[in-house]
Image (cartoon, rainbow, N blue to C red; front, side):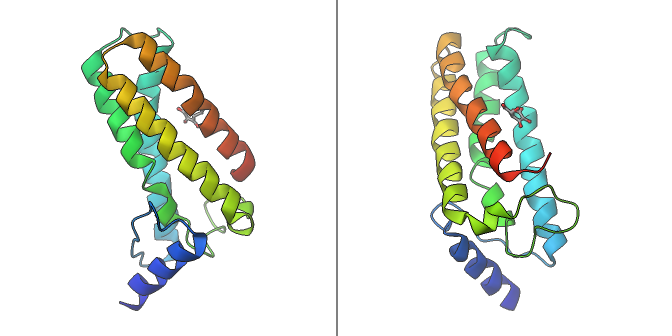
Length: 151
Ligand code: ASC
């Protein structure tokens, strides 16, 4: 219970409670593992959308929709894993995630909005719509990684 409460408070402290689901992690490494796992799933499915947007694989509207929905869901999950004190160990998270929490939250909010638009675009079944929503989302991934992830 104590851990659940502290994870919830940590989430609030980050100011991300609006869209983060508070998780209870047994240990800090578990929070790191969790956020990496959500990023891995996201990258895999964003990769599918990217391949279609870039013409590397044939456009498949159903597969694009499925992947874009997964991307949009993952975009709501990472944040709960950035609990205080988890800038150590097997992580490339920069200290700015915690010292500049407002900017980090802004990036997270933008990602949630961009990926929701990507999912909506995918559902139109139109490749041009998918392409139009893909670019801003990819730029968002990159700018957040540049600011908050070590090389
Ligand atoms: C991905 C992935 C990222 C982003 C980024 C987009 O598939 O793993 O980090 O897209 O490369 O610019």
